[in-house]
Image 1: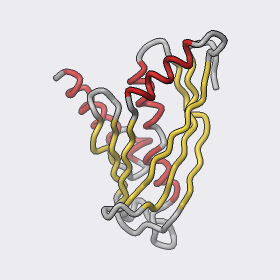
Image 2 (image 1 turned 30 degrees about the horizontal axis):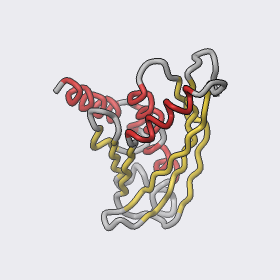
Image 3 (image 1 turned 45 degrees about the vertical axis):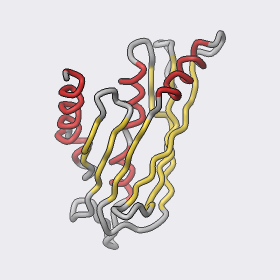
Length: 157
């Protein structure tokens, strides 16, 4: 119950935070264990570019922080997580609301922990992709994120 309430408060906080709010994106769901997040990016006057399609900056900004936040929350204390790199592939101009769904599995989290527990390995890079799709499931953009994870707090990406 407390985890569910905390997840709801994070969702509200994201949607009120000025830097995120400016993207036009809205967080619609955060799982209590932070292994799933859903985002909605409405097509509106705030997210349209000069030619009338969804602005690429809004597309990227709406999905930017989530894999980093999900890993921070899911791995727990003792891990350093930073966004390191991103790539956006625009596939189809969007004139409608877009949706993104982020997921982490228990197996992925255990793989990260196991790899970092290996002697001589104090940091790794993980790659994640998320599609921005319309209501019919048509992909309009794919964002690939590289996330740096470390167990050594003195290191940075």
